[in-house]
Image (tube, rainbow, N blue to C red; front, side, top):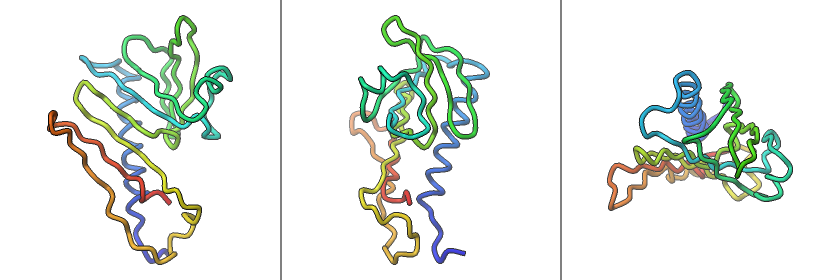
Amino acid sequence: MSSMIDYGNLMHRAMRKLIQDVLSDVEADGLPGDHHFFITFDTHHPDVKMADWLKDRYPGEMTVVMQHWYDNLEVTDDGFSVTLNFGDAPEPLYIPYDAIKTFVDPSVEFGLRFETQDSDDDDDPDDGDEIPDDIEVEEDTQKPEAEVVSLDSFRR
């Protein structure tokens, strides 16, 4: 048993479960009202599946929009697949939840941001580091309902 509770990973799992639940509802019932999503993900994640020309065009990260047209949404415990239209070219994508960097629904000013630590010594949860306090809620002063949860230093 670890000598510390890994709150960062617990929060990441909870937030990714929230994304899974939202997408599962959309899979079953479609997008309600004005809801739509901007989803930014790491195109280099080993489990991302996308056309080579898209990987070439977006070599680090990519933001997709699920709004007016999407097809074949399938949600699993590890990620989701969806077909989106790029110009006039429908392309299937598979995006694991672990590859997601941001998930935003601007219709209700809701957003999640997942960031990773830059250090390479993240594998040892008992390395004696203090627990950083950078889970934060950022509010736009012009839009006080907007919340972005940043979980960057808690990922191990």
